[in-house]
Length: 352
View (cartoon, rainbow, N blue to C red):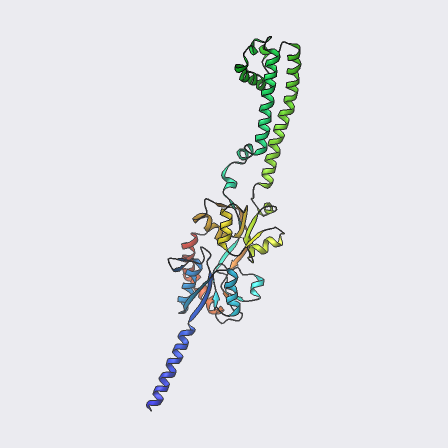
């Protein structure tokens, strides 16, 4: 009798232990602020807070396996090494064919980030200080200076204005030539010698050419700057040094649009290259870029243009997992009782 009782109790202990073990889920994730990250060793972020609420609602325990690369996280789900994965995982047709997803947990999309220096100076000021304009200005001043000094040489014995020694004549002569080009000259300082008058006429005519070239240079430089020096939309990405994360939905979008890009294995190396000035634009998930620019990268990057290619994040499960339906039900309950909204506001503020 005692043996039977002992076996029954032992069996109950084994069953209880198995049930307890079944209630502990192995969760794969990757660091992607503000969705999944660590703070002094604690798991934090929107997705991690939501996971905690979902596990609590179902009486589950979770262990977190934080991997280095995004593909590693998805591979852990595909292989069954992880019961589920959560971070900023976009629900796509290709991924749906390889794993199961929960209902959407976050509405997202792609956006473009460009260096702050693109907007650090107004376009006109930036253009005026370009190399082409500086060269044009230098040539114009040289022509005016040489023209003024030649006029001094021709008129210094006939026109009182030019009766100055060489060391005092350079600026008045330059000033005379500048006023000749800008204002048409001074009536009382009209050249009096034959060669002085001929040269004055030639200087006025040639000045029209100099001014035309200068205006054309400014116009051309501003046009080139407007075409190649600024990224404000997807169409401006062509010909730019664009970066994104390899294998991401952003990479797929750029490939479909035939936009050349540099692919990175993770977020950190991409942002490092961006901060070093080696990328003219980054295309990636809008909330991640927004968090970066507002918390860490406000000195380096700014967001431009609207969010495009709207997509939803979800929780990834192995194909046929029995966990999908319980998690969906728990997610609906969190939305209904306001828990989801509380977590959302904690990380993203009030919705528009």
